[in-house]
Length: 488
Image 1 (tube, rainbow, N blue to C red):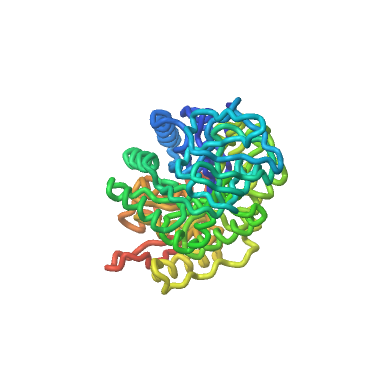
Image 2 (image 1 turned 90 degrees about the vertical axis):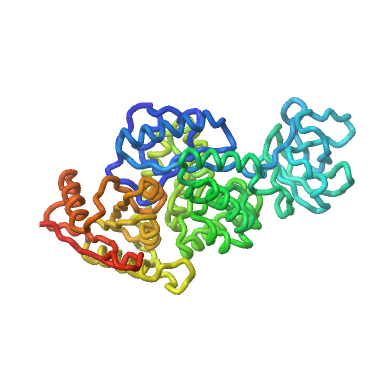
């Protein structure tokens, strides 16, 4: 790849990029970091621990060399059900044809007589037992649809409703079917423990169905001595039934539109996306929009107009971050995809200013620190009213920076902390730029540091104003102080 050019300013919407075969070396990751990536994703469904450790080391090497904070998200594979092997590796299913799911070894293709129904296997052993007449079975990312018409102890017979081509090992989706398979299986636990040992920042829990599953993963992380944050991936209809409870339990949310668009009516995906984003804003949690955002850029230097509109609308809806998957993991133009995502965000974000203000949250709600929320809300309004050049928030855990991000102020925000983990955590927070190395013992010292840094980089001039949010050091742990400073 040719050298990338550092953006003139970062977008307020954060960019998550998936690492893979085309983005494994430190040089390749440096290109993506310079182009605008804030969080790098490791997909636990693909690759070995050795490969992931190499990519993780490359992220940290590139981040250290550029003195640019970046976070890492590890996605757990979850209970993904896949087809077994097919004769010749693929099979065309015609409309109204009959097929049977049978209890057999998924590694062995099922050869069937010409006049008999084709026989399919799956990696989920209880599948035949748990299917019922009338259930839908979706194959090939939802492009092929079956309906269960008959059952026995040995097979579930289906009619092909939507014809198409299926291939070995493709995913199987079962909308509305109640499955006994756990969300956090043995492989997921193994990857989660590996992530804790490697100081990963975020862990994505796939196919969440209830808040108890999130708490189970959080307990596992706590027992391993990790404070990594759990990102709940919304891709099952059951999750929508308990959306508030799931968002409250999680540290963040990912709208995983690939499986979600198969599990629910595809025509409702955009509406559901808006619902999830609104819930995350109300409950003060960051939300990532994922899957096929710039999918055509796996093969093309430019996205389709529909993809550009999709990314723009996600930003207008209030997404904290947008995610690239195959575009940066296996695509031909990973850097260009990041640069395009950044360009779209910069073009869209000014329009967000025209939308209604985020209201001050309910200060009596559970989990909301009334003093902190009121302080950051007021600080943001002051910063905009006096046309401040930046807001500075000093935070131990990042919670205050997140509260500020959720208020959607359009003044650049610097998040400072003694904790490297907190700095990385803020990489996911909308509009917050983590700044390492700032002194936090004294407010005057911090303002002096920010002022000198701004002058040395040409970002601050005499007469510019800075708004600082901090605490007075009184017994309360809340942020309860706003300082306005004008440069001489």
